[in-house]
Image (tube, rainbow, N blue to C red):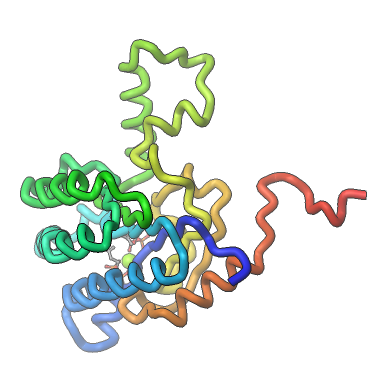
Length: 236
Ligand code: IPE
Ligand code: IPE
Ligand code: MG
């Protein structure tokens, strides 16, 4: 493949509509969505992607009915526990980004354990965004920055500021894929996506598959990322 993205971030959307289309309760869509995440992880690794990030729960998703929120929190905890061994065996580094302190304590423990036990791996990285919101991330970053006595605010650079973001040790996403037909970012990685390529597919997340991912990667490979510069061929 010509040019493969280093970091792909997924906005896994459409679980509820997928369930509705199949005459099932919404939670069945979330359950199926979790199994698709696992498959996508494997396919991404196989295709030479080094970083994958999955938007699993936004800060705004806490406004959903409590039974759905509780189901999702349980699902995340079970998922992390179930794949703990496999991630360690396959030497996959795990991270979670978001306001983790507002998550149920058992989920926080599962995140902490997996983060610590995989912290020394470097070949493939999975990040899950949980209770993530880019606006909260920025506010939290500014709060921490102002508490930092050594920082000279007037001399601050982007490289300096990004050290305060949840994503401080992750490269920016090259490609953001959103499923379900919605064409928006929904408060996801707003600063980190400044130069990301965006790819939208109508497929609901539970139906997302290898063919779709390879199409997105191919589409990305055909794009020209200028980052504000001009194309050499047009410069005379
Ligand atoms: C994405 O699917 C999963 C979460 C946001 C937790 P949705 O639950 O948003 O599914 P739709 O958009 O209602 O179909
Ligand atoms: C975005 O999906 C969040 C996740 C995929 C976790 P939403 O379903 O919450 O987004 P909106 O409400 O359609 O923008
Ligand atoms: Mg949705």
